[in-house]
Length: 454
Figure 1 (cartoon, helix red, strand yellow):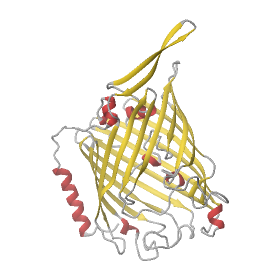
Figure 2 (cartoon, one colour):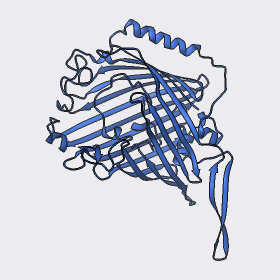
Figure 3 (spheres, one colour):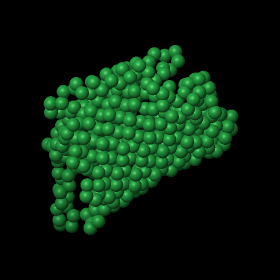
Figure 4 (tube, one colour):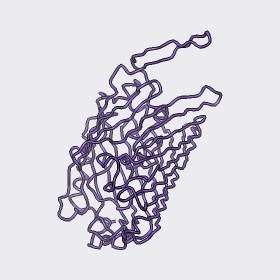
């Protein structure tokens, strides 16, 4: 690995100094809406946002409805065969379920993108408002509206609206419905694309050009699904997604890009078990999608994503150890793209592997994470053509590298993060990967981020 340039080394040392000069003696907290609703601190449901604890997973599973604050209620009496029963007809929070999030970031790349400046600040990188909390005894929401720095527009971000209930039998069963706009945003674990590591990162630094279909559908679709958790052990879900893009033609017409043909099924199964201070979950998930590159008729490009994941947690005296890993295999049949001459192959494969481990020191408010990723797939000079910085000289999507992150939480709803990404392969090669003389290590990146929720 190449030595970091002087400017990046200086910036890195400055970031570390900044971490240690933030005061640690204040316990003032500005609690977001879920915390206000439950009366619990952020640490009850999270270690470092968005990583969920066991209680956080249970809160989400049950539709964001756990409440320990003043509510406004109205009951009605029901009569059945001479017996009276009481139904809760209204139960709404006595406080507003509104929250906000602010995120800003500073990025320094090992070698700047040609004809651009380096060492850039995104302010804000994201500014979000949330309507997040209980609507009724069995209905809750996570609705995010975000100002995006790159586009300068405001739009609907991750959204998950849930109905949840429980049975009264000997075996506890939680069941529910989810209405959401991003496959895997409804998931309980931090191993699927919507909530996997890195949880946030630079919006400026170059990233590998290949992407899985299941990762790229957020905000382009809407899905309705049913799920069940049996005996707090087995989780099963089946959902279906259809096109629902913001800012696109309605109804979709010949100008529409990326429309889903029919309904795309998504499935999820997982086993989880708590034993002593240890927790483990193992599962599988996947999606089958048929997409029109342009328009809503003719050939489609077909993608089948199949994933496997594992999450392990162990409580230790000073905090928690966590391990996440997932592997996704995507089979591509590019009927439309191949017929248009935009791909070299009719059939391709794309495989992605991630693993990360973290150490959370609760009293110090510190979290250390290190991860490795590997993308491997079929060479295709039509899909991955030579292009300065973002292309591939050999038509390969293969990329790999390490990703590290240090988080400091002076308060539970405030987080300062420092990331370093190092690539040993980028878009198919370690050296001159784009055909214009750029090496994989030129995209190594330092990213400093301030995030807080209120």
